[in-house]
Length: 449
Image (cartoon, rainbow, N blue to C red; front, side):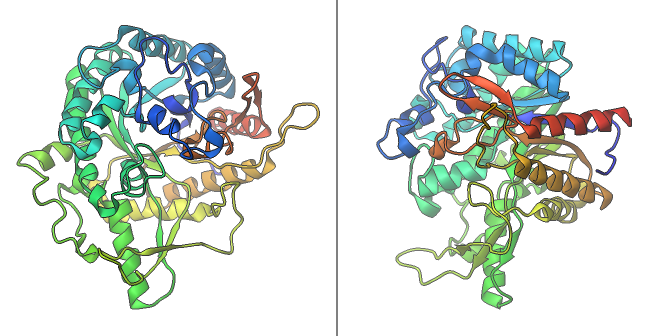
């Protein structure tokens, strides 16, 4: 394994709805995911996040697992409905108390807390009022950021505003396979601007509360044309603008990318107000990069009653995860180098805030989980980060998704991403072979410092 720079951050990541459970405890309100899980057929086998990993009650055990792992950072998310049950108004003190205790325990264990303010669990009352289609949600997000940071910023320096706003737009509002289950197709585009505006306004609130570092996390994917034809190359360029640039250009350059290839004219007309882009493009201290898979596209087929979208094609010739995703470590290097080349000196330092894989983990008779395929995955992707650093990209950290198996959104409990195996019947946690491998890698890197 290559030697990483001194002070490089090694961590793990989770999200509130995926691990906490206790959805009706401590004054927590409903989120869009609570509502979505109640819809017949929305989640595989009708599963819900009502209990998940019961982290709300077992957080001490989970912090101990991280301490034994030797990570220097833990990226978790703060549940907006736990802090502000209706999405507006005063803070729910018992909810903030939970994150207060977690923060102190992490710091006592020598682990830097890296909270994400929004990891998809929008309070249901805000969705009832329009959700991210409504401009007011951006203002409500800033109010919530002020409440969370007002309690925690005296001990937490680094804050992530949004997680993967492209997925919220695409799967939540355009296609409807994620909460809130809207199927608006390109009519979902206003959610892009309102999420970014929320990021900008929350950045102001975080700075005012004393946050020293503000980060935005996007999921990035190298976009490959299915062939060398001019049509497929144009389709790849269009999809790259939609996924990789729509949520990054406004932050780092102060303007939206050209989406004319979708036949939309100016998609921001009537949505972007004076001062919005100035707020959105306020300097951030780091960019979070989530990477899982490349994307391959071909030219649009004939459109029926609307703009034609590029066609997402399967990528053959690579091993796959239990999710059926191709395993392409070089895609992570490609993404990181592309960001460096695209934004040059506008690009702040980068953290790989999520990277990991679902594998068919089956405990042996002695209870152990020998997930050698995950070890191979992580080894390849960590080496890909090293390649990006060698190419001149300022990467400051790498966080594995995920600390432990959890509720995997519309897949329920059928996909296991964790370094720790969770028996959902007993809530017993069992570190997998990959946990030991990652612990040894961290220890080796730190001993060389």
